[in-house]
Image (cartoon, rainbow, N blue to C red):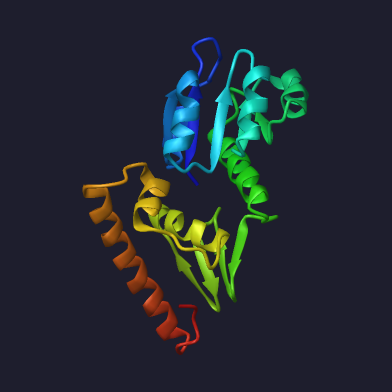
Length: 203
């Protein structure tokens, strides 16, 4: 999951970017007027929208097809949802709740009802960061981030630059080489898993 956080100087963000960073969720930040340009240039799973007055922006952003999690105090949640937000979170919600709600809204948008994703007989547990198919393989944060879109969009082509963009927001240079290293380690881990299963694991 990769998020875009809109910056509105008149809105209370409640340290949202610090909580995303602490949870290992890759994200970019953009001034509210620059958000449409960021959405055109990069592929985001969700927009986190803390705004003083979201009514004018929400309709436009939802029309553009982006998943929006709006930020507002308790009584404002219903209004934000009625305006078109896919979810609404409180500025002061803790990191676990924030990440869980963002992941849930992205899963629903992709047609997945739970935090367990399936590809054939293999199951990816996002919350526990492990993949299960007869045996359980523990994953690092980056490995889980690589597998997440593959499980969410089985059969789709995932270019390397798009994968880098998804996991850390840097589409070239050292980030591509880092991705090669992570994928190499992940393949070795899954190959050992397949060997223990007698060759019946997923490809």
